[in-house]
Length: 275
Image (tube, rainbow, N blue to C red; front, side, top):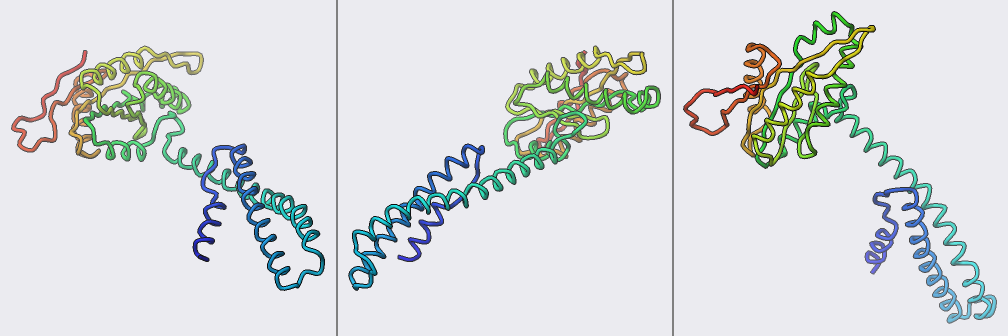
């Protein structure tokens, strides 16, 4: 019986998570009402027990009036005062933890997911998927010519462009200094390739302002499809091969890698350029 009562009390006082301060206050009032009701019941039971053993120093009627007038409101107020500060602290801790988790998985310069988050989402995806790896062309020259602030502006604008082109079913990330990656889940490979080409053209059409002068940037890309069970490393390797072909083939283009992870593929990587 004692364990049942203890379990019930724990369930009633369990804080859990709170969506807002209003949610905390609502929960505090509800819990305080329960606590006040339990305290009132225990108080009445104690008075009846004392009355049964003739231990009440005053009449039963007076005792019940006092118990009714004092116990519920005092218990309610104390319960609210105890519950609300703890609930606020738990809420703030949850918000801080969520923000820390978001920051730990976000690249601050581009606003996209970072490498850690990208790898985690890619490896957990058990649907048909594909990966696009993009690398800014001659990025070191941009930094050397216009300065690192201009280079940071390029990365930020490229991140913004990728986020606008690809839908929510895709994950965009900055996985290296000037290297970006996108993966799609449950999307036709041709559609994903077309979106990659749209992103490449939009990036090529951007104008970056620096020192009263403007310049444009281009990206090269490698695109590879993946089996649902394939992990990041093996798919990235194929996409990176296609990216190397795009770089050596003249830059500002996306090269497709048609090789898959099927055991027994007899042919080497087959590539074609999206022009």
